[in-house]
Image (cartoon, rainbow, N blue to C red; front, side):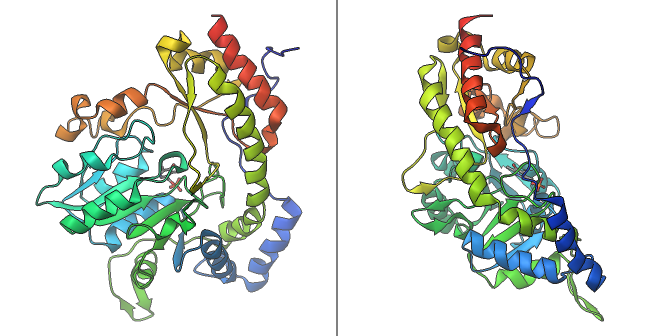
Length: 379
Ligand SMILES: *Cc1c(COP(=O)(O)O)cnc(C)c1O
């Protein structure tokens, strides 16, 4: 019997991992005993080491959030002028360029991976270009080799927004070791989180010294401030929470894999619904589960599916709609013209993030598949 009645309570596209509160209390006791709540306390130190190990990177700096980390990454590499980036991302990506006085130059995306299309980068390079800011969208790795080749040819820096790519590996190599710097977000909506938080990882570990100064106002010691830094420090409260969530990540991945297996088996059988590919050489992030709606074959467009699922108490997200190139602060840029970004403008109308978190369970995943099929067959 298919249950096509609305869920009793809203089923969101994601839910945060929540450790036992008593356990969190006992971790916080360490901060209370030390009377040390921030500024690289013992929880910060332990957290930074353990996340670095988990990510398989030689050096890491943790931050109070991913956006400040990304702003700092761009500062640390002394980027200026123009930086080539994608319009299909979260607002933070182009905004960190603006916060550094840099002009974002939007480049179209690949129709399958939805990542920056390396074949479209070169024509956008000018004498003012200093870097490429690419995003591993939904955890799918960018074409890192092609991007690096272009960067090497033109002497550009490469920064990756790896906010969705926690734990991703490409042929066994940690995603955080590609490019010059990668940013991870530990926001509550991410698979791994510390309520708010983020990190930078480096190809060249020597960069960590400069970043650690930048994240603490440029304070070198009690007498010397050596550069215009910012406050990017993670507090002991976040580090302590993150330490506990770290222990929950593997099990969460297992549970999400079971849900993904249901979705992957059932959803492609619905005409008009397609999924993002998986790759045998890539260890997935299990961050989001994204479907694409082809309005012709499905008979309804993505926005209709979104609205119908909402009536059934299934709260999906149109990630990443609208395109950054359509924000009022960027739409006047020449590179933001829709005619310059045809693939991004098509993809952005098709994507929908559906519920994907361990406590959803496979039974509810089946129920959501039934609902999507039902929306196609009716309304
Ligand atoms: C979540 C996210 C960010 C921002 O991270 P915060 O930690 O929330 O500042 C940046 N880029 C992408 C693609 C994200 O999904």
